[in-house]
Length: 383
Ligand SMILES: *Cc1c(COP(=O)(O)O)cnc(C)c1O
Image 1 (cartoon, protein in one colour):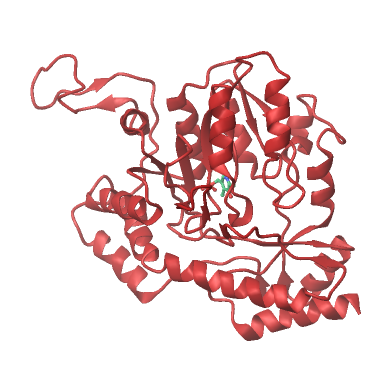
Image 2 (cartoon, rainbow, N blue to C red):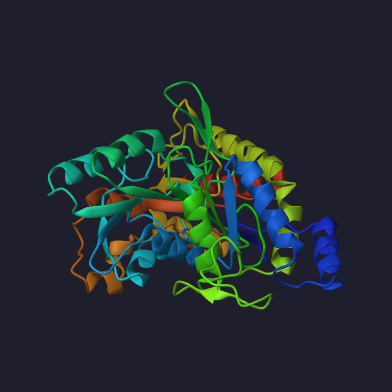
């Protein structure tokens, strides 16, 4: 099957954990969901966590509970998976894009500040930064910008569980810990750090948002005695909001709990793989390796290079059964968004980033031999 850019790793313990659920009384809404939430919250250092069907549902729920309404504007980055932007539209909101930083490829906070300062107060409701490839966005600075302009922050941390940055006070801030963003969300698609098949998670330190998330996850229905407006008896529940069924199953969560045991080790392995690539390409001029600032611990969901002759390199590697990928085609250039008026030239940094971006194989079970083969082929291509 060759060498893909990313791949899940399933152990015997993972399989046993899933089988145990299949033999139990609960396939969904049982004890594994709660346990996964608690353990994940512990892993990223947040107070609350809400597990859902997938990352896209998580993004939708985040917008719902923060109150994105028709016509309201939310800012995000063009270099992300389409779902980040789409989630705003699900609520009838409008998306505006701010170009990316030339080093980190995450949203450019200077440009964001400029846009906010030159727009009438109240134009924008929120911002959705993305920890691209596992590079933690400077949410400390983003928080101060957001506070000045009265914006909420949903951090799309799908790529970054286990990553962190050291803040201006010297404190280690894990991605998803809720110290600066209102909500953070994750995906457990098999290609991400932790696989549950399909799955997602939202973390927060805000109790009010947490309560709303629980409500919207299950049709807007509650049975909590303290939330009910009437009480007809033991069967009684109330639908108080137009929610959804975004529940995840115990089967998925059992797999997630088991995977979480190896998550930290996985990020460490990813960092070792990154070091080997960095070393190998140090003197290879046509390849630019990822920038990492001093205060950053990168989670390396992806290892993205900027490569000369990117298309030819992609095709050459593919011929040798190495399946790289491009993350991402700028969202504003997708036909759906072009139809909303976006066009080439609107976000030049993102567009030139896209021309050379290539994600090399990066996953904990990638062997040294496989990685050496990838390196050898890239060097051969440029020789
Ligand atoms: C994977 C991903 C999503 C969506 O998650 P799903 O679980 O596939 O719905 C959203 N944003 C980013 C940055 C992602 O990588």
